[in-house]
Length: 390
Image (cartoon, rainbow, N blue to C red; front, side, top):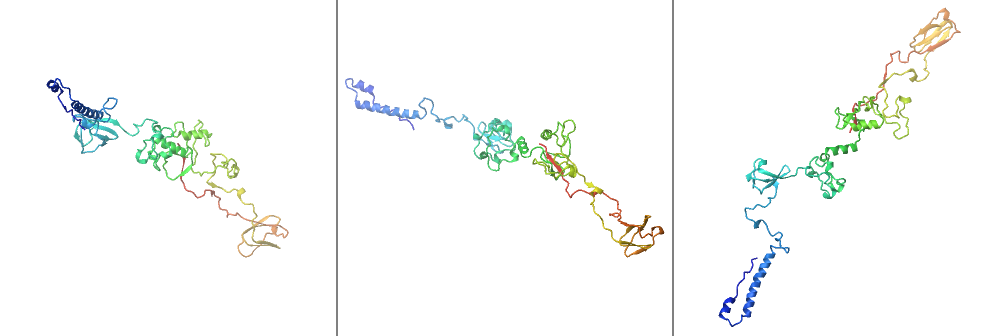
C-alpha cells in the first residue's frame, strides 16, 4: 500500500504578509495539521512492514524479487543428474553418485563432466554417518526398511548400543545381505557355534565356515581359531599331535554313536566289554567292518545223528546218513558212508566181537568249506562329515 502524500492546505506566509493585523484561522490550521497527520500515519504504517520493533529489517520482508537480476541467491532445487538437460551456472544443482554438485558453467549435459560442477557435499552411504550416531530416538518406528539400506552399509560401529529395537525395523526387512559381513558372521556363530557336528554333508565341496571331520591337526595359524580353542578347552577330546595342537574328530569310514553318559548317568548300551568301544568317552573309536566267527561264538548244542548200527555175529549193519563207525575192542575203524537202505559189511576177525562198543561221529557242519570273515557293516550312504569351524 502506498503512503498518502502530504497535501498542503494553506500558505500561512502570504496570509501574514497580506493581513498583518489579523489572526490565523483555526479552521485552516486544523486542516493543515490533519493533512500532515494523515501522511505521517501512512508513512509509519508502511515503515512497520519493513522494520521490526527492535529497529532491524523486518524478518521475511526481503525475497528474490527485492534484488537486482544480477544477484544470484542460493541454488535451485536439486535433482538427479540426467543427460540432455540445460544446466545454469551457479543455479542448477544435482545429485550424482551420492554427491551434491552445483553447476559452475551453463551447459547442456551429455556425459557427466566433473570440471563443469563444484562439489558441495558428499553423501556417500555410511561415510557420512559418524560411528554410534544412529540411536533409537533418530529412527521412526518401522523406518528401517529393505529399500532404505544398501547391502552391507549398516555396520556395528554406526549403531548406538540398543538403538535398533524391534519396533524400529519394518517386518521382514533386515535380510542377511543388508548386514555388514562381520555382523553376519557374528550372528551365524551365535546360531551355529564352532564345534557343531560332525554332521553329514552330501556334496564334495565344503560350505563356508565349515571344515572336514578328518582327524587333521589344527595348528596355531589355523583359519579356524575358535574351533581350535574349543578342543583345547575341552581337554583334547580327539587327541593332539604332542605339541599342544588339537586334532579334529576322525569320521572317515565311521558312523557317529551317541555319548553313553551325555545325561550324567550311563546307559551302558555301548561299552568296552560289549563291543570294544568306550561309549562313556567323547572321541572314543572302535569297531571293524568284518569279523571271523570263533569257536567260542558258536552255539553250545548237541547235534542229532540219524541211522542205526547193529552188531549180529560177525556182521555190521549200518543204515541212514553217512556215518563213521568204530567197532570192536581192538579199536578197528570202519568208515561207512551209507546212502539209502541198509548195507552189510563183514568185519575183520579182530573186530567180530559182539561184546565190543560202537560210536557214531558227525562230520564238519559246513561241509569242510574253508571259513571266511563275515560282513559286519549295515547298509549305508557315504557322505562327507563336517564340523562348524567358526
